[in-house]
Image (tube, rainbow, N blue to C red):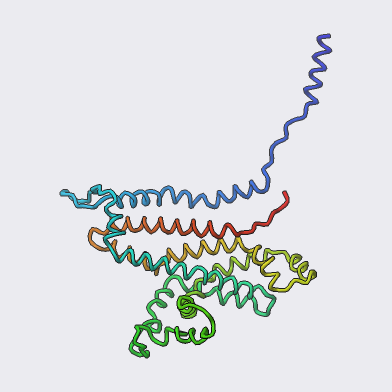
Length: 326
């Protein structure tokens, strides 16, 4: 009986199902590849940038002095550098306020313009690829040597060869004036602030076009990801183009609106011609200005972070994410 029981136990063990080897899903494989791609950035961040960040934070709470034997020494001063930046230096606060106000003006204009142009360029027209390349060319030429040449272009500055209007600007720079817009809106109940906004928007069209190339490509990718079957169903149901845009197109590309809004905010606040960054760099070059500029930089960083969080929170409330059956 013992031998028979052992044989039955052996048969049960042999017939027991073997554990299958776990195979990673496609999403996990993609995640691993993604980690491999960002690994060089993570290594560079830890080795190069983190020490610089900690050193900058340390400088912002200290005052630099020169030691007797040579070199520099740090004297803790607490929040004195931050108080000086916010309350003692009027130029920094004024530059900061103007820069943030400019963001409120630029972000909606760039996002709306890039969305409008992406919808036009997504239509089935002859030479569509050429038009897309033309609108993306400013992104390429706005970097490096060409951007420096453009910044020093005498045609964009107030020179003696132009007709001075007495306000510090010339007729070459301005496309329309406030008087033109007031005449256009003479029969409408609009305020002076709206008139000024439209005037600044039209006169700044060159800058808006130059900074809309990347956003345009992101919107194009989002528009092309929408299934044509959805639009065909709308046409069968008799929906107009206006209804199709607000009910189908706009909700489907709302995640891209969030991405482009955040990208535009970061791009505007970190550009080389940003007024706040230029002023911080100017303070850095002054004698004993290293610690004060470090405090200004961290104040600016916190404001940028809060602006990005605010934009994300506001737009995320209206973002539509398509559900997929799993």
